[in-house]
Image (cartoon, rainbow, N blue to C red; front, side, top):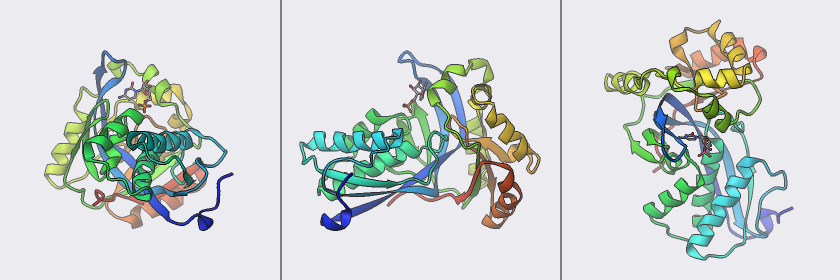
Length: 286
Ligand code: C5P
């Protein structure tokens, strides 16, 4: 157990938003074994809360992967500046683990930022980016969040103008999905020809938000058939072009211009799926 924050002086709190992929193109296998990606990513109002304070190092003993990534993020920052090693934290999880919503990666950035604030460290953007890239493919996007074109392994992040406010109904089958397994199941014949992200960018130029689809969907359904069952349920309520999978799955999402519509469809679906949530797009951190 860690010390309670109330007894330990200064406490900092960081919000760690989830992300969705409005599109995901897989452009090929790279020499380093990772896949070359192109995606429009968007942070949303669903998120975890990380609280940090000076105390006996570590987090809760239930050591899920998201927690170990927080540990590693704190340690990398502390090592980078040879700072004190007594950062304790509590992580309030709301983003489901292994759901294609970037929860672990966002927690890692919250841990980096929170550690800097707590220890009064001033790390430059290039140091933050280097540490973020070393922690995982999705992590650099969360340094700014908002709307961004993400390329390469995930490390090349180009900020874009904020989306017109968009609402997402997120639906999950209630079990974690292994990103590694989905990529291993993926085969290059399952792609949309590299045009999914272009479709999203073209629509955004005209002020419209659309989903471009996800090259990993076929592989994710093959590796985790429950995703296919959830997709069938969602497809009974909504047209196919309003639905897509986020990241490597298994969360499926539908987009709506208003929250009212998203909540209305959720009320119809909620009892038929293991997990659902309504969230809206949120802009870049200032
Ligand atoms: O970097 P991260 O830990 O999120 O990736 C998990 C796994 O997903 C990697 O080990 C790799 O097998 C696969 N992956 C990939 N191409 C990417 C990102 C992840 O093949 N761009």
